[in-house]
Image (cartoon, rainbow, N blue to C red; front, side, top):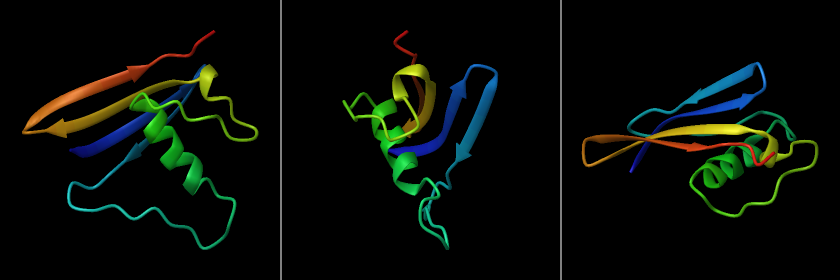
Length: 82
């Protein structure tokens, strides 16, 4: 499975995280920049029951994850639970 991108939609705000097909390194020179939250959002978009992080309620977001499996592109959408 190759993760191509993750779209995070919060009302009118949309943020896209694109990933390289070969490898992706999530890093920051400082702590508290959202690295763990990004990984948690990827797992949450795949359907895992991941709890929200402080200050960001996952249930209020719309997530679109694009993955590639065996040369087939699959879009997974997880809508807010409002």
